[in-house]
Image 1 (cartoon, one colour):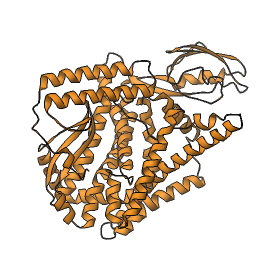
Image 2 (image 1 turned 45 degrees about the horizontal axis):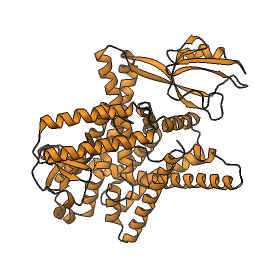
Image 3 (image 1 turned 120 degrees about the vertical axis):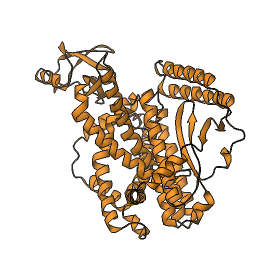
Image 4 (image 1 turned 30 degrees about the vertical axis):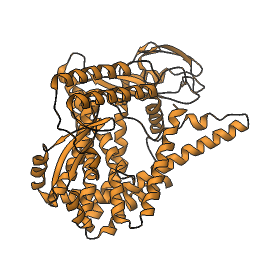
Length: 491
């Protein structure tokens, strides 16, 4: 929830031009779809999409006199405040309990530092919740990878997930769970980000050392996964479902801040969206800063953590709804197929068969779902020719000594062609999958001790020595930069 609103004060009142705005919107959507279907490099696609959206923002600002913040424009006002007022009057105890629960999930046993705010019962419930989220809900969010159009990344994640699909009770597993229980997701995400950066730097060092010995170890960097992945509707996310999921995530986050602010009798001046092109990139609720500063720290903490708590809770709700839809509704409205989800490094199929290709025939056996694999498994022979017919071409490879060619297959679902009901159910399925992933990401990432994030505000409120918060912010910033590096060489 933004704290400094001086840069976005209105210079003039918006004058909406609906006809011109719709024309700009349609042209921008057409350009984004054209970019997404082009054969350009993925990174070039993202840059082209961002430039297109930025140009749309400039045009929208000019024709509608929107307030702007760099390449973004703000659509805000008094609308929505009455709705926040109504929500704050419905069971204030629930909203306060949600914030306290979010605080425990965010900081674990460290919440004992806030004894006046969190009861022992809530502490126990929050820690159990965080462990369930870590071990049940978060792994389920991988289902959203089916809807992310980042093959270089999603294939690596899918391969890693396939190797650890049934994790044993290892020291690492126990350590991660103890860390989450003790310090919550705030420390978890910070250490995960820093750890990823250290791993990337180590891989680069190994590669550079191997280059100096004239035997380059390309594997040290080619297997790295960037820690930052752009999520752009129409490019890396489905266009309509992506916009809906992002909008829900942002509105729930910011409205929760507003509800807790009103429960604390803090005036809400304005609510709105921060938009890039036609994509909502942020939302804001502007409270009365002077009234906020006069509140006890416990209540300030509740307001600050409310957005995180609501996103994580919505992620859990999305998970429950997704399980119901997948188990009881979706099977009646979908068709299934199998596609290549990952390739085993140095296997016969590596660098031959493209990831994401839908398998139509395997050794002349028609493939429709995972049950079709039973016939394939009985026909596997070492060092034999395996022919695949896919939607991206036909391929023949020689199996290895175990009869495998080194591909991972995932069952992909889709709506039944020509069925409006099937398309509607499948759209809901996509929105729920994306909502599960995006809300968990938004809630957990917002806990990072970085400027403009909720975690930063909470740390600043509790830590008197500001050098500590500045060091944490610098560490997070440098780690974010390092996590971008694999895009330059490892995709």
